[in-house]
Picture (tube, rainbow, N blue to C red):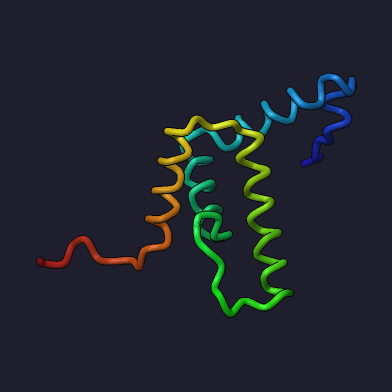
Length: 104
């Protein structure tokens, strides 16, 4: 596979923002992309407060993870309703797993 570059995809500078946004939306706003986005949100802790005892280095690392996720969100421009649904999906990803076949 040959990786495409942004310069090749948007050879005119004015096209760059539209090309990048369209690419992000095509990746993340589909059923599989929504699953990946929920997993990334949970993994980077975007909707969770940082632990109080977090050191400076670990805090910077966490902030970087959150900033990258925020970049993705800014590129796909979800509605407030979609954002709330994403937040709920990320919350569900952080819950402990359980067996749905067990007797209650």
